[in-house]
Length: 450
Ligand SMILES: NC(=O)c1ccc[n+]([C@@H]2O[C@H](COP(=O)([O-])OP(=O)(O)OC[C@H]3O[C@@H](n4cnc5c(N)ncnc54)[C@H](O)[C@@H]3O)[C@@H](O)[C@H]2O)c1
Image (cartoon, rainbow, N blue to C red; front, top):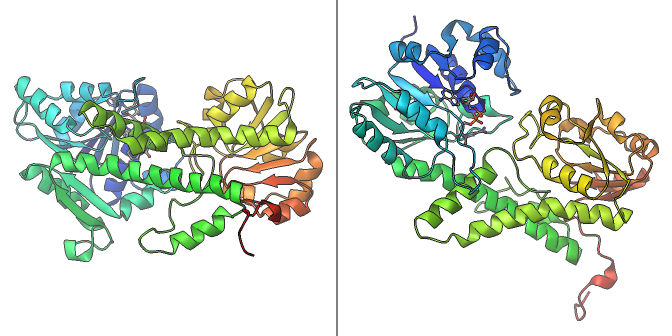
């Protein structure tokens, strides 16, 4: 029996499962609850419903400490801290849909010994609203802690076990202290741990805002470098060089300065929109975020322009998409650029074939009218053009001469600047990256001295 506090985790998606197995690895017994009975059965059989590097191994290693159930009362019996990791997808208006969160809140009994610990990303003010609901329902003894999650799909286990920071928002009292204790091992030695995680212990609203503001800032950084890339294309500068030069400045940093065809995923688009809506609902017009979102949408569509520039009409053209997941090392297709791209290409009359090393099954459910290939070479064979959408490492190893000879055409749009452009051109491909400006000398503005 472990000396660490047993916990409950409600929702066993990307965040819930990683949180559960992460705490199990740190020594807690964890009861995982989900309303999806099929998912729970798979987990009970030892099958992992999502792809996340290292997750299956860690679940297996900690099997004894993990219980999977659809029955909330098992978690309530064994644990006093109930981590909530249910989905908060966007509504049509861009607000967060909190129906799953409310379902959890309403399912809680009156109790003086339990606390909800919110890992789901929620608008600022949600904690306060939940506490009001608890009071109205005669459950004012139920504690509430905001503990937003910052893990990145693809490196989620490492992010959990060695985080940059842990943010805990509460009003003082046992629950916030108990959550802090649970995270202690992943904090800095000064905070009693052996990792580099800093603790930010704050009020609930500020904790909620840290999460939304962090994602909005990262999305802003991506849209910023994408706009720089577009200017590079007009002026002949190379955004890869520019980003390198910028990123060496400590104040800027090199992360999230990679130009490409825009951000996707289950968090950035949703959280940027949610913050914009939240600000609007509170009477503040968050102008910058409008631009961040618009730039991102246009960035995905610029690829179509690049294809048309090289191919003319897209009617009847066979276009291969390499990589379909929203980023490498995940099977998550939520808000993936491939969804927008393939829909636009099909609407323009193109024939679209896609390949992804891991996300094929998920992609098959969402990409309407897209032929799915079993390998990159199968997707490329007979294509008029290829768009590298997701920078899976295996695409870096493509034999470019073989690519050129198997295609019907020769256009290669590298949406993630993954490949060596000179090598691609030497192999006979018409290669275009994002923001790699190849403006001829004559394009140098008049009056410039060389
Ligand atoms: N995915 C990420 O990278 C990430 C990172 C940080 C924060 N977040 C936030 O964490 C939250 C969860 O995201 P996710 O990607 O893990 O979602 P997900 O869709 O993968 O998982 C949500 C799970 O909750 C379950 N669920 C829904 N209602 C339930 C209920 N009433 N009781 C029990 N289970 C219920 C669903 O069946 C599903 O298994 C979201 O708010 C998201 O914004 C996600």
